[in-house]
Image (tube, rainbow, N blue to C red; front, side, top):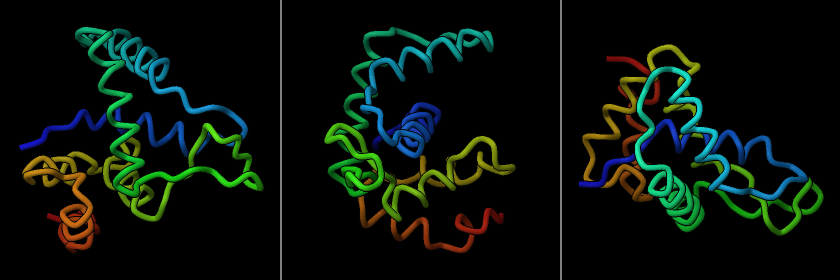
Length: 134
């Protein structure tokens, strides 16, 4: 079973969302994530491992269709991305600023691999998670 650091993925997806004209750099985003955890009094763990995980997430999110290269007319520079429809759905499910975000994360964690394309699409379409109910 694959487990994911949803807070880190959320941070990466927000950086994609706001990345017009800027290169996507997952390693510094991992450093910022670790600093935010430390500021909350949480142990961020091994920083090098976190940076590596952020790079792996970037690759996986791209390969699995959650993000795609940003078109030039939208501020693309060949080194940044946009959220796809799937990526937008993922962000809306795990976004910690939305009340009830814990439940969708729990449902995703119960999957063999929550970021597998067919698994994610099936789970995200279920009313109990998409609506934030139950």
